[in-house]
Figure 1 (cartoon, rainbow, N blue to C red):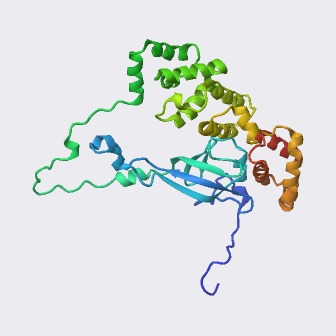
Figure 2: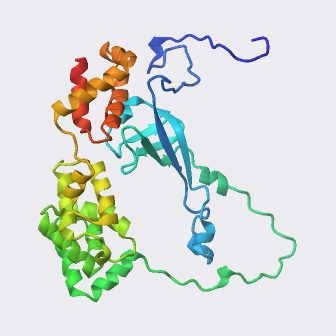
Length: 347
């Protein structure tokens, strides 16, 4: 305009160049975009290195002195393609010019997507460390003693500690071997589960209650131990049978993994039997098409203009309606069933 502000952009495009390199034409770049109308909001978590020194232990100082204060940046209100709503937790993507991301298995829901950066496209670490060597001083000053001059104490890893514990316990050694040979667990999982006798007994009791060692081990390693931290398993407000019951509910698709984690959080706080918690808190997954139909029809009625476009073949709105339905059911609708019903609605 008269004040020099950009008020309109005029451009043209050649559809024959899509995914091609036409002879005689050199494409200088590509524009990546998402539709403002159809895209959905998401939280993006940009993870960087935990430490701002490549080897904190080698400095001789406390490792906490080298924690990177910018190891996590959270961006709220980012926009992503609506199709991502349909994908399973843990799905991975490349977000253009930013890096590779994975949807958060615990926090991401259909109506509140969360993505964690796995690998950036550019290595900012190289830029930070690629500095010229300082010029040598004319006279070398007397070297002052520092913390780095002190002899380093080699710390043992947790795996090494577990190995030492097993060396003193034939019972744990037997479990370490049996978990691999009879239960089919990986060496890493067998190692973690056989590093403490009380922990191993809790695992054995869980498998006795639900004969699915792989599933029990997965929940044990990924969920239980993360929450347990340095506490003793005897301090848990629930027993091995209740834990096995929760794993079975998730593995048999009686509840979704996300609902299972909500139940687990309640068990950690107040104990209780999983089925009773699901009933008391109304967390039972909706798997009956007849129960979902009225919810879906109401979502359509509340969004008449997008519904008309969706019914007319606008597939980009599929993810939008999945998100709205999951929100209306507080995340309790079976996502697979929701997708099936929506596809039937437009086919």
